[in-house]
Length: 112
Length: 114
Image 1 (cartoon, rainbow over the protein chains, first blue to last red):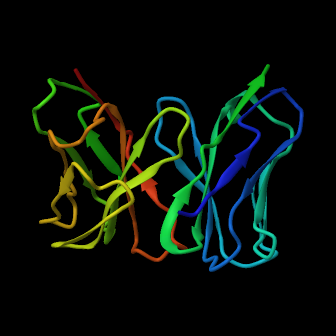
Image 2 (image 1 turned 60 degrees about the vertical axis):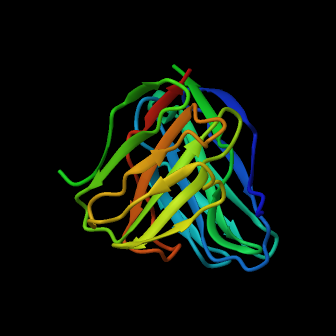
């Protein structure tokens, strides 16, 4: 089974702080890396899907990078706002399976 | 509005009873998925369907069954054979099975079996 790991497990920051978290995955047979944002009482919502080594994607204050050779992706949030508070999930394919495997998520809390 | 609906939001059942969770999408997506979430674990794939009348087991299919008679609908039955059915269940869909397509998720159903 492919192991997708996210760190840290949780993060508390002040409004205006920039922050980042990590998703690591086996690099063999890599196909795609997904990032989702999951706010409390809502459905998970896709942020990015990345497939190429060196990919960088940006949506407003949120950006992500991908390194498929070493098996990691970073998600950055610039100038965190309280509405950024959510669990951020990453998911990847690779290894011996062609299924999308999810990490346990990073819970971000932004204090006003 | 296009999206995925799951009903009900909360479901309570007695042990030994089968229960069916509903999932409907109006996004015209070919692929649909069922996941289960337990505390401290990532979403785990139960079943997926790439097309009508076809479905495949995911990583934790034992004790579950599905059907895909219509493109819009992918109900999940939690049978009495499922040893630990109490969990949060999420349904998702994507344009097709290719992993470079993002998945769209429903709001989830929390099932409690006592």
